[in-house]
Structures are given as C-alpha cells and as structure tokens.
Image (cartoon, rainbow, N blue to C red; front, side):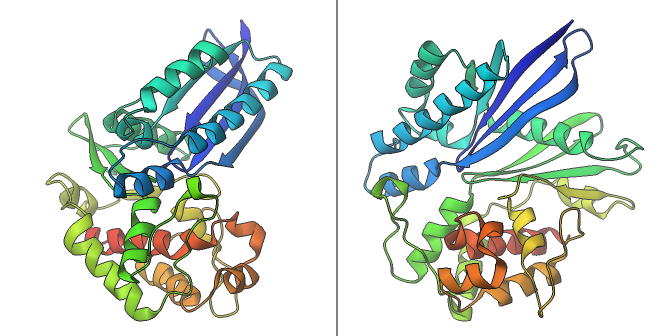
Length: 319
C-alpha cells in the first residue's frame, strides 16, 4: 500500500522538509515529491540568550520556526500527505523551553515532532551516509565513518565490532561564530535581534586564534575507538549534508581563480585550508561576489567559522 508521507528535520540552523510517496509494506521511498530547507538560526538565538543567562529560545525565534513549520505543513497537505513525523536536534535538547514549544506545535499542527538524543542523531547520520554510497556496504574490513555537522553540534559515527559508536561533538556553527567574534572583541548577536553580527573581514591572526581556541578549549578529545578505525586500510570518511553544510561549503569555494571542487568531491586539509585563505580579509559583500551569493545562501558570516571548524577537526583526526 502506498502512502504520501511528510518527514521533517528541525535542526539548530535549518528546517528541512521531505514529502515522498512510500511503500508502507517495504518501508521504501517510491517517489520523492518535494524537498526543501529554510534557514532558521535557532542556535544563534540560544547562544546569544545563554550569554545573557537565559538558556531558552526567544519568542521571536520560536515564531520564525513556527512560520516555517506552518508553511511546510501546507505544502505537505497540498501534496496529499496524510502522515507526518520529524526529529528535533541539538538546540531543542538544550533550550529549556524547547520541548514545550514542540508539544504546542504537535498539538496544533499534528507534525509528530520529537527530540532525539545526540546518539540517535549520530545513528540516523550513519544510516544516511550508508544509503548514499554505492555497493559494497561498509564492513569491518573496509569501515565507514559518517560525519554530520550542524548549527549546534557534530556527530561522527561508525560501527565497531557490530556496535554503533558515536563521537558526540558539543559545538556547531553558531558556537564557533560566537567564539570568533569573541576573539575579535565583538559581541555576538543572533537572529533574535534581527541582524546578525558578522565576523567578516577576518584576519589570518584572528583565524589562528580561533583554531587555538577550538583545539585547546572547545573541542573534546576524540574517543578511543576512532583513531584506530581511521587508520584501518580502506576506511572511508563520508561528510554529508544539504547545501549549507560545512562539507558543501568547502566544496563550493573557488580557489586560485578556479571553481570549487563541487558535490561529491574529496576534501583534504589542504583543500579546506585553501578555501580558508580564499575567504580571509573579505567583507560579507566581497565574499558573496567572489563565491556567488546564491551559493552561500545568506550565510557569508558563517563561512569562516564553518571552514575553520572543519579544518581543525580534520587535522585532529588526520583525515
């Protein structure tokens, strides 16, 4: 029996929608009807409020989230969706009013949203990475390490000895942006104030100071199971995400007058650092002009925080 379903991923920086026709018996997608994502920088709002001693999301941020969810529901109903489900991630785990907001939304819109643990988020990420790869499937001989990074956290996950292990990283784009602004001596202002504070232009010295802060303060050491796995012959590290992910960003930044490597490209510490150097010293407007405003999706202020987080973790892990 076929059913049209609506799936939602309510993240710390982006709200994502997928409407699909599903074979309920086999649990497989028969046809994707519509998919999109919209920026709602909830973790920006939470980081800003936490600095003022309030570990909750502002009414303005919640209103922005609700508006997107109402629009997504309308699109799904128009497409014939009769079943709704979704997950909410890091920002809702941390915000004191996050669960109450989702309860209201579920009661009024019937979206079936639930907060998932970071371990569950890592498991979903691992399954997503596996589904996007060609055969053969991951094995202990040629293991797969899946890496997901968002606005409020990152997860690096893999199967070790038959069990799924997840490195639960506590920082995301918003936290790193706030740290960079702190290095510059500027106040962090998130989405609830209407205008975001941009760290651009960023100097080489400021970038180096942020890397030092990431290494010494913000990033925890990797778990014991991860380095041996990464050193195993044939190990594949797969970073994944939508158009605004740190991996898509690193693949889109042009270097030395050439286009970025593009989707599916192999990223290296050298290629990511080249993207960092290409972005240093540029204002938001200059960065948009050099890269193409459409490719940055109104996130010029997040470019260097994302690239520097990516590069620092890659160097730490030796990938």
